[in-house]
Image (cartoon, rainbow, N blue to C red; front, side):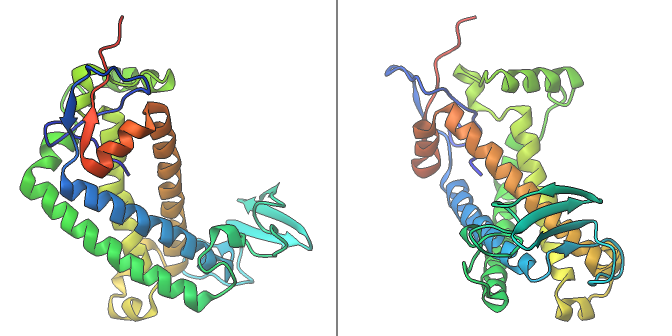
Length: 282
């Protein structure tokens, strides 16, 4: 999850074509770079180990109960060598991708799971360890955001950015692959702010809380968790949807990095230094 800073704080995106005389600025502070890579590895490992855990019971439910005889809202399964995805009763053939792939009859194939061979116990060990890594790193990063003022200065949307007109303009620019240039690239654009705030204040907290709800020990110690999410099966469904949200964020983020200029973006998130794109000729 790349973050963008100029003069030690916020920044934007760029294009592949960079003029030699474009200013090189220090954009991404060290705490942000450290959190980016810890967060990235934690999410990747948790997604892959989570898919192996899901393979143990590839069905999702809403409500207080969820078992083989209950009616699931999502199923990833197979009939022999034919895989399928069923969502709310609508079935989609997924042979070769989900349900049956790589000659295995698991919901998710070995290529995208940790461990690659079926092991529920092994997957849980990977998942729980990196869940703690995510929790600790997210907590420390939030403290940094508040103490440094980064949260209010660079992530909060100002009045103009909250307007429908401004947001719609930003959406149209992104759809046309018109990324910010010049001084505009020094600050987060509204869509970036919304995406990062969504990760920090929605996806991470909810995925942690729903994960705690599915723990029998924590569930017994804090029964209000299950009540808050409408039952452990509902918590598992919400946990899965949050994981899907993380996966979607990663895909969009990586595409944006590729389109914006991967070498310049990688330099920024590794060294902190970023070359500002030249102003676009209007």
